[in-house]
Amino acid sequence: MTNAYHPDSALTLNAWQFPASIRHQMIFALLDALPMNHTLLLINDHDPKPLFYQIDAEQPGMFSRTPTQEEDSLFFVPITRVLPSATE
Image (cartoon, rainbow, N blue to C red; front, top):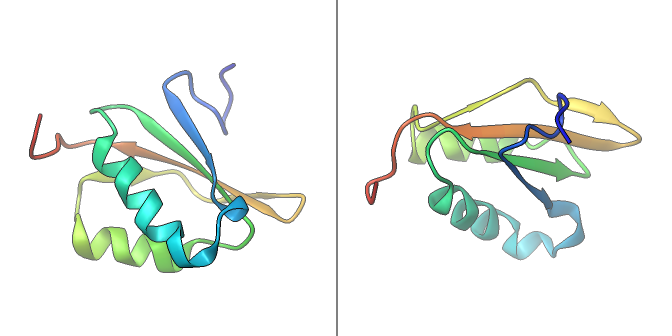
């Protein structure tokens, strides 16, 4: 299924289903394992701006993201790896 929320190469994470205490840790583990030019579709119950600040501070330029889309009180954000990881 390909659309604005779910590119063919997207891994989907419904982050709002996990305890807040582990969300960022889990998201960063998935982003670290994400291959070049692949996408993590993040779905959350609030605008993930604090996460974006953390990504930009810790891994500047490694990921691109499209603007957050809100639908039914959920936020959908495709995050794509645009630079190779240290292990690639």
